[in-house]
Length: 208
Image (tube, rainbow, N blue to C red; front, side):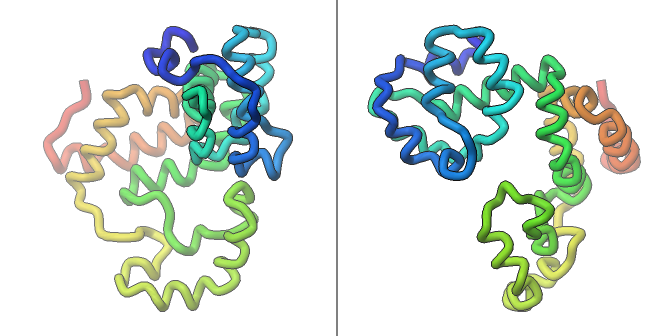
């Protein structure tokens, strides 16, 4: 964690004022405290940090409401680093937490968009909160109200060119994101490679 170049800008010491907890939406629904994250990192409590990587960090919604910290701490940023450490080290908690998002990863790489209206279902993404259930109840009405024709489908939210999809794939490849996916979900990685193989050939790209 400390080797990450962002870490020094995310942690300056905790006043224990509780402002981050009061502002945190996740703290309202889970046994979660951004203050505990900052305190564990400040104390370099390795055992507690490891425990948090197994549980707490996956309850964070990454909204960064905690940035109102008067000390200048960024618990959400610390959690970002912790999540990357968990993923890069192949922790089971990372695999479990990301398993539900494999279809989103697939949609991003195959269609260029993260979600379509039909995916807004409370049972699919309970961590999106109770508002999703209200949206899903009137999904047909919302879809008819959206002007672009492509918003009415489950395959894409808007038209994405082949070149854009290929460039997105190459970015993920060059930055190591695909290697992380391969570590967490080998079958998804193989599927992405298969989907993108023809597109890479069409656009004249070759992977290193």
